[in-house]
Image (tube, rainbow, N blue to C red; front, side, top):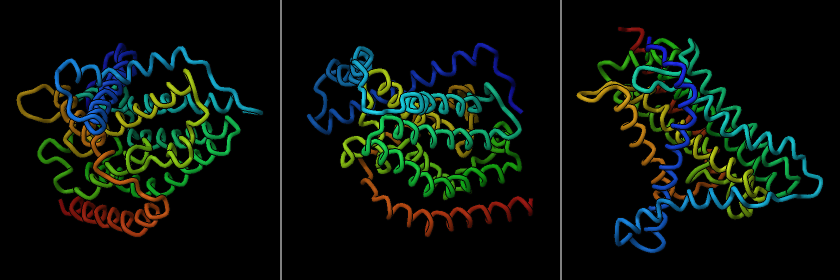
Length: 314
């Protein structure tokens, strides 16, 4: 069982996640700049491109909120705020090295429950403005969730099965010798795909797609839009970070301290997920649902069966 983190870690956690989200957004801005205008010619130009998300955040802070007719402002605001809240609460069970803010006996279930909270949050954010396109974006996220959640749950369950525990600290401890990604590659890949879907990022960006004029975020402006999009980045950071204790050995590694290994592995996974936005095409919703139910679910079930056999014969 990992050591309990000091009390100040509770305050530091959301700040650390926000900084990680800002760095990831800066990295994405650099990639976008290179794709649109070619490689940066100098370090100064690279820094200017990386600072674009920060400039956009400052612009949104002073932008006036948008009003729509007969909007349900309470539910809309609640949905917007719940997205970063769900991400931070999910991050509470992330062990940094071998210490976590909280390590309950059902930590993996807690993480999955916060993901379900994000479902409701995005739908509420789409419902609140009383706009057809916004509502379409919210329902798209629900449909996407129905497709990715089951294989995602099987991927989480497989890691827990290998450790014979739902406590995240026990999952990390079980990888002292061999990381789970070595003998659970299918569960790892499915988890990464579902992480993209959970953050409606890259090939799973339908809830905010251009064909719906921005979907769930179309009527959001000012601080509301900043919190919504910031929450989306936080979800991407947290899901990337959770792959480390689940499949990549957590803080285990040579030479460096445990927390440093966690940071290095999280950064590597996060860069992979950010780059996936350009490497993978946007998947049509009905095709993804068909693939999820006909391919990913059977694959994850077979993976879980193999792990169960190994565990029973230890």
